[in-house]
Length: 286
Image (tube, rainbow, N blue to C red; front, side):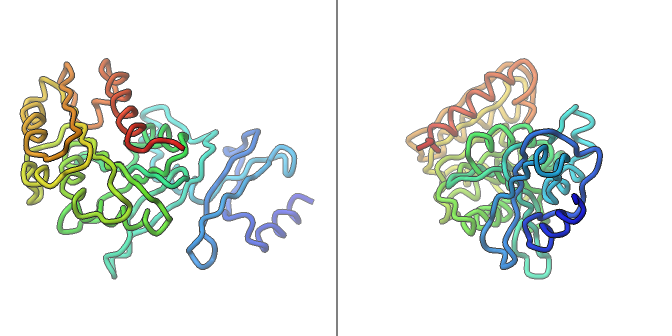
């Protein structure tokens, strides 16, 4: 009976995945996201597993994200079990240099793009992405595609979100990702960039100069750095001076954490609170 039902659902296109295993068993309902065959409209598939099949469904996009980040999750004792937001994989086409290699978690008309530093990948943002996605926002995490500048990847990420109907976006970056976010902010037309949050921006990288990038940022600006991370701590106030933004805040925390590490450790609660407050203020919920 279950096999026949699964086959019928798959033929109808109502189950966008091919694998259900014992490791996936979990009571309750889990939502997954997929695109319709024409690639244009995301839909939510709700698998009411304990009643319908007695097993849980593991969406292909969830599986892809879990496989991609398996080492990170094992090291940091994380799991995607129980995630109740849609997850959609997005892809980069090297032949056309279009798209972005990553995942979109959550839904809604507003979004956050999380750009990682050079020594990490998209998986490092998983805890942050999940928190913001559960607040009814789309969160895009990605890996750089090797374009001429990392800011071009952020522009491509924004374009991906615009195609999903996103209205507003806040750019959040760590270290090199922060610098790239500053550089990309003035070039993105859609969605509207509602703010830029910098975690330990560096002074220059891959041809991007921090001060020249900041000179074009007119949106609200949050700049975080650690006092003993000397290069970032010195850059932080200078970026605020260079920016013409009328809404800017610089917070230098104790310690020496750099980039995404600011969100962990003893300063983690405050840094996370500052970032959440910035996003809530610039992407207010209706």
